[in-house]
Image 1 (cartoon, helix red, strand yellow):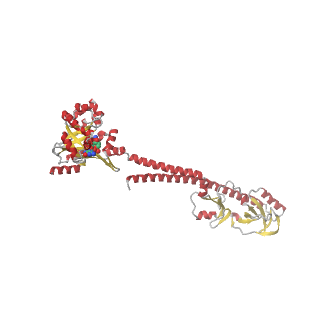
Image 2 (tube, rainbow, N blue to C red):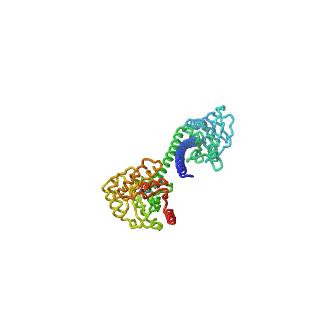
Image 3 (cartoon, helix red, strand yellow):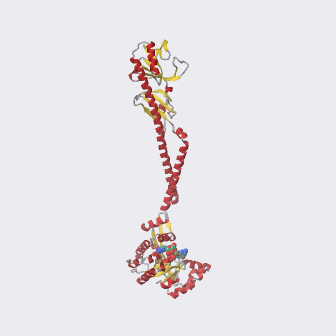
Length: 512
Ligand SMILES: Nc1nc2c(ncn2[C@@H]2O[C@H](COP(=O)(O)O[C@H]3[C@@H](O)[C@H](n4cnc5c(=O)[nH]c(N)nc54)O[C@@H]3COP(=O)(O)O)[C@@H](O)[C@H]2O)c(=O)[nH]1
């Protein structure tokens, strides 16, 4: 996989993860809200259960305390009075010898009724039975769900429908009586507790709570996600869109970050301190003898992201004023590399490119002090391109000191942009380098090529030597020779090469 594909994949992954993270956070927050709602429902149901139980306990205990042994008007009056105060109880019955003999609603029964077996027996012998289809003796035609609770001599008919459930938002809930062995349904959705306990339910959508007062009475509430989402579909859609947006922004940010990390200047700046620069050597030859008399040192850059051309990094180094750091690194490296190059003869000309800004700043005087540079067995030539920095008296003074110290000074890229003839006369140059655009123009016999003889006139008038750069063909060489150019540089003789290759190149030249 290519680097840029890896980066895009990384940015995509970051975006995806942020989106997923957003969705998870959204799901947790929504889940908490859903759970909060379910908890409120459960609390409401438990409150009712406790209220029903308390009411039944209070009323039936009071009746039992009267110790009536038979059902007469007094007993019935007491039962009716109790019922009058009740909220959840709809009838009360009186038992004698375990037979129902009268009810508050109906009065004395013609035939006493046997009590049915309870579903479970509560503490203190309270017997409870759930009747899914029950009718009071008073209203035999009205079928309803009822819970029948028998406490000693009295029973109470509780109608769950009496419980006010308007505030319960969940559609699925169940009230049940739970022992270690059994689950007794009382009201709501029968079997819900078993369903919640046994089948897979999603987080937050269900809850089982038991009463603190009567711990066997419990409620199960189930509010499925799909219902909750469909209730708040608009809100969910907006949140989802925000998550996708956050993912996209994060992806874009990641790719922007990667791009800036890869930005040329960041790479160059890092490269200055992490040895991403290396230097190559391009031969300079004597056009008459074809002997290699010197070389130009040219910088190259390579890091984990790939190579950068000098035309990319040189302007940045200049812009960010890192020119002197760069030149120091170059001089240190090439002195090191050339010290072991026994193939190079004494006096071999080594041309270094120098930034005019450093000339102006007086930095180049440090070159004079640099151990091993002037003292080396090579002739060091400083190539300087003309620009606005070379126009000051300060620059002139610094160049003079360099020339006095023993450096050869070459005016580089002559004929491009900023050439100022006054500089040629006043500054202490020794050499002029004809820019390769003039040489390339020879093939088409263009205007620039026609100027070469005039440049050579100037060169001889000033007493300079001349190097033509960018020679690629025999024809260019022949014309330059006729024009009187002494030295040449270009792909015809050799491309810029790393030191190892340059040493091999020089050895092969020595042999031939
Ligand atoms: N201050 C410094 N400047 C430097 C340094 N290293 C390079 N540079 C400057 O960058 C510019 C571009 O350099 P580069 O891409 O290396 O191009 C040089 C040669 O490779 C190229 N060349 C040489 N022969 C031929 C040829 O036959 N054909 C062809 N198309 N190109 C050729 O010409 C450039 C020569 O550079 P220069 O003599 O300096 O003009 C360039 O301006 C460099 O100066 C550095 O270490 N410091």
